[in-house]
Image (tube, rainbow over all chains, first blue to last red):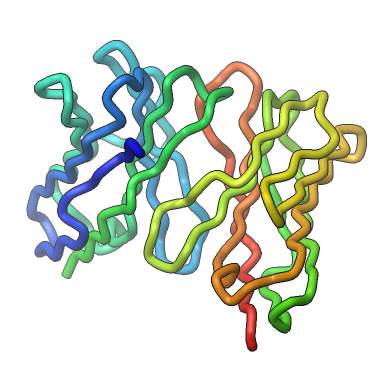
Length: 114
Length: 112
């Protein structure tokens, strides 16, 4: 069964460092998303991406964040200068169509900023 | 601001028993409502998807209901199993955009 895969599963980084979280969406999907979940809190939308550009982003997704689909299979989330409060589980998701169709989530990357 | 509220926050049930989880939302209009199961440290997995015109949807021992008039949904788990221990998240998709609005989840613990 096709699935969304994320790497690494756990990343520890020092405050101020740049991190790149990687995702391989399901191959025929067209819409890609990043969400985050701070420990004990609800999942929060960060950004959606379609046709090689951002289609929507939340207030959380500020200039520190960027997304890229560099090679047609990977979908990456970059955090330029990490802060302690960026520590969270980051989930990538993909869907065949827009949000009215089912989104499939990856297993997540746990980012710990120290 | 879109809101999705779930209750109870946590629930302990005996294996084999049934339980019902509640979701109240203020998102309007919306295109569909979903229930996801999230095991600890894992990504959410879809259980049911209902459009605004559907009243009920089943997936094995999981049955979701939707009352669009009162903006309430429920998820009923029948004959619970130990593997049902997880967080169950109500997600509402507003009409016209791609943002999924998540509830905080109902934490269910099934004990033998």
